[in-house]
Amino acid sequence: MTRDYCMPSWQRWTAQLHATGCPVISVDSDGFIEELIPLWVEPASTCASRSRWRPSTTSSRFGTLWRSHGLPGGVDKRAMAKGGQAIRDELRRIEPVVSGGGFIPGCDHGVPADVSWPCYLDYCASWPG
Image (tube, rainbow, N blue to C red; front, side, top):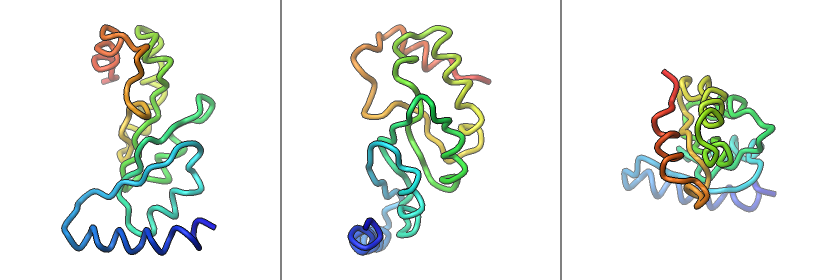
């Protein structure tokens, strides 16, 4: 259904945007997007925004699907809110795909209100390496 109903519009829009010199074309979706990624790549989108990951899903699985594009998200907001060792463990979990390129770590829909300023600073300062 996505190919039949959405693809024609996506192809038209991306062609128009590329014609203007627009370097980044981002699509937006929530939920499990693995099956949509190949469809987004086809009309030449360059990035997906607000990608939400399930805690049981490893982000490295998506990095291989979207290596030449930007795939933001993947940081568990609950770990960010806890700060300290919880956020360091979370960042180590996603480090392999971050270092491989194409993955833009962050949390979906912005930083939630339960993340304190000190915990956010800890998140920013805790990147491995």
